[in-house]
Amino acid sequence: MAQIRRAPLADQAAEALLVRIRAGEWPLGAKLPGETTLGPQLGVGRSTVREAIRQLAGRGVLESRQGAGVFVTALDVTEDWDAVLRRAGIISVIEARIAIEAEAAAHAAERRTPQALRAVRRALAERQDQRGSTEEQVDADMRLHRAIVAAADNPVLLELFDTFVPRLRQAMVDMLRIGRNLAEEQDHAAHADLVEAIAARDAAAAHRLSRTHLASLKDALK
Image 1 (cartoon, rainbow, N blue to C red):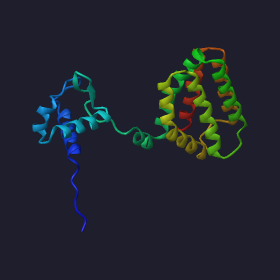
Image 2: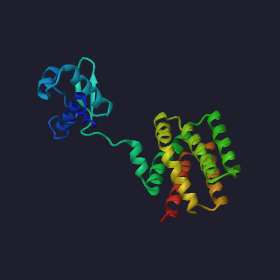
Image 3: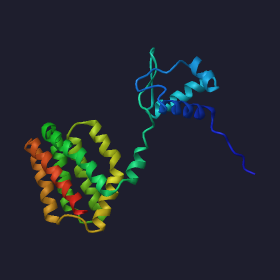
Image 4: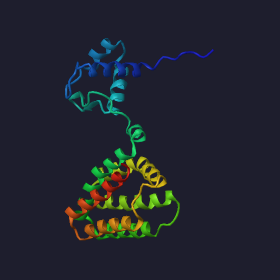
């Protein structure tokens, strides 16, 4: 007969601390009491308190500052990003693309190096020559858009895009499979115009063209 296993003490202590943070016992930015105070309150030892704090720090709720103590940096655990993306609908995905990619396109126009521009042009040519499966077409499109984001020279934007790609890719595959896409020539022209704006260092045009193109994908779903 299978035994019911209790959660480890550190997990229980972390949950108890989280409940108290959610209840407002310690506001955002507040310093937590020391381990010698929290331990008796939670009914655990100091090592268990340290592990509970480490868990909540890893989840973005607490931050340990050397020589200063432990501070509240969030009032709840943020939902797992991958779970959010898996649940998101195609329109939500495209709206997020607009937020990330239009800004990245403007920065790319301002900051792109000759090497980055060559990578963008190469990805554009590969995208336009792609005649494979739906998945291969989407992958070629993703490579172009990633090259543009990389040209923006902002590691945070690039990290956001890379984290976003699996759900983004699936959304684009779904769109093509249900026939909700722009005419092929018009679509290629939109991408070519965007690349030329980046080459010309026209940040305003790059931002506008990126936003207009992605908004047209969103409108096609309505």
